[in-house]
Image: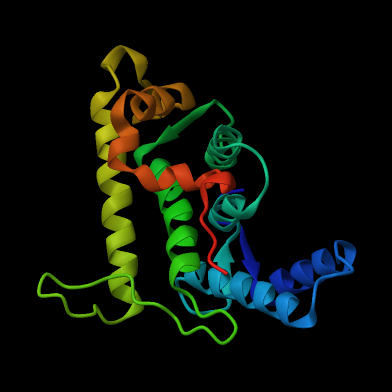
Amino acid sequence: KKGSTISKESFDAAVNTMLRSNRRPNMSKQSERMFYNLLSSIFHEFDKKNNSKADACELACGLTVLCGGSKSDKLEYSFELLDRKKKGLVSRFQMVRYLHSFLTVLLNISSCKLGDEPAETILFTSSGEKAKGGHTLQRVIGWVSSWATEEVFKATPKDRKEDVDGTECINFDNFAIWYTKGGYNSIAWLELLDLKKWILSS
């Protein structure tokens, strides 16, 4: 539903329920706490107004990164989540949200503090200095998502686009064609939706 949000309290309750129902005998309390902290950190990245609420749809799309299944399944499922009119189509705005959700989670995972490990800096200025502030990261994510969206729409022939209430839209196949024909070189990070391609350090 458009505009639907989830509160941090409801999110925490859902995470705790999930941990209780899927608890593994060999999972330590420390590992449980680290996992909770990771999900909490991800939630805060989607809490754009700092009011302990996140866009439920965007958060759900982003969290598919951590789910099992193929990259293609995750991409198609998330596409359907953002297709609020259920016509198999998304606008530029929705496509930006689509890519923004994935990249937000991927960069959060790569930089957040886990256990005794400090948070890592993943952005640097042209002079090699560390970029400061979470707003800088969000601006980069927004720019990359907007740029990639424009590339998809530009590559999609006019006769394959649809007009929905005066708004130009494309379907999932249009995005898939762009990606397989070279888009993967531009947004290679999307390959990380396949958990088999993750390299985990001990």
